[in-house]
Length: 318
Image (cartoon, rainbow, N blue to C red; front, side, top):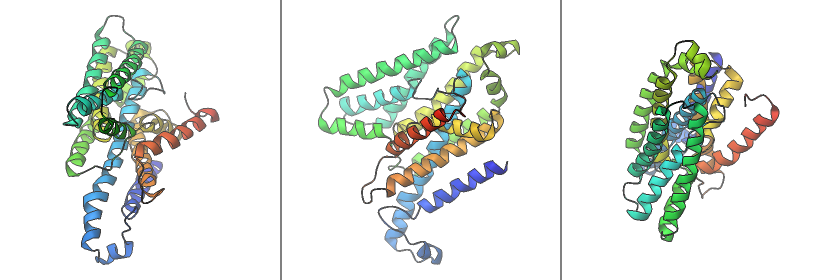
């Protein structure tokens, strides 16, 4: 419990510190004295505040989704991108940009993610279907989605291509009150639901045979958890683009510190995801001032390096 509280307060400290960092400097002393200018207040509340909240929420959501999928498939290398859910969202965004001129990008992204989820759910209903087969189906769908996206982009204008690439890099820079409220709702409801499923997740991560021997309806629970993970992924990816490694890395770090019990990991991985993406967004805004990087660039580079380190150190459960 002390370690979880430490992670939580560390995340809050990073988020608070981030409010005063960026291309536009806001004085901490002016904040304490209540002497912020109108420009300071506008930047603080209209841009920084919602962006920082959005980064923490998206990180937490992706971490929850990754933990759920890894327990469901009993495979520590599974994440939303592995299953093709993010690829479906990317295809939806590409179609919106190329065919409809960028109208309703978020709606198309969510629709694309749920189309992939529907295919995965359909495959889960097939007879003698195993977790490995569903995983391979997701990987195949990911490649198909990428191929179709490239097909559409071959007929796109340079402006459309730039929009799709920008989205694909992943960023929380366009966060606002509506997005934060939406993400908060998805996060809270999913966290409550998954809290009631942690014992089942504990059993599933040791394999389907053990779960069946304990009387668990593997197909029913598999479908239910897959729906929750799809909702989480579609919500985060469609609003903020492809932000890699958070959903994969957060559960690994949490397991390294807290062990394998999902009753604890659900809290630990969620906080870890919020912390990782908060740090990534802070670095994205401050490394090359006045230019800002997409947060997905930071998570892709640093997350990949950290994950390779964990693998080679031999202490990960891969």
